[in-house]
Length: 118
Image 1 (cartoon, one colour):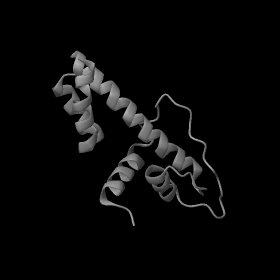
Image 2: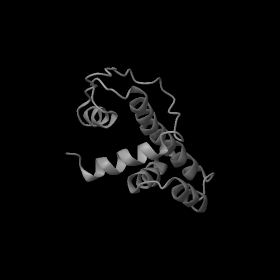
Image 3: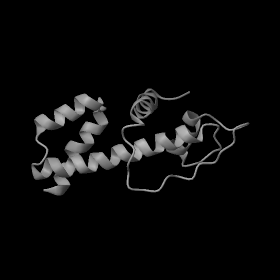
């Protein structure tokens, strides 16, 4: 049902949901339904692909997944700025890449966005 890319990203968010917890925004409003709601994964997929928030039986997990996604995007921006200003040399960024097993699209986003901050 899910694409390989979605599975990869979702599993990354799941693994790092308790580390990447700040994105500078309020939490999304989650619709809870413990009896008939969908899993956090199903709800995240629907929101990520169609912008539709469905009822979930796993509101805490879904909230953490949303927060993790927002947080990694926030960190990408900060890392790009720091790379551009010379505060985060490539060797140090590689340590971050390895420590958090950053996905290729995350690394590419940092390297492409850094040019906005020169």
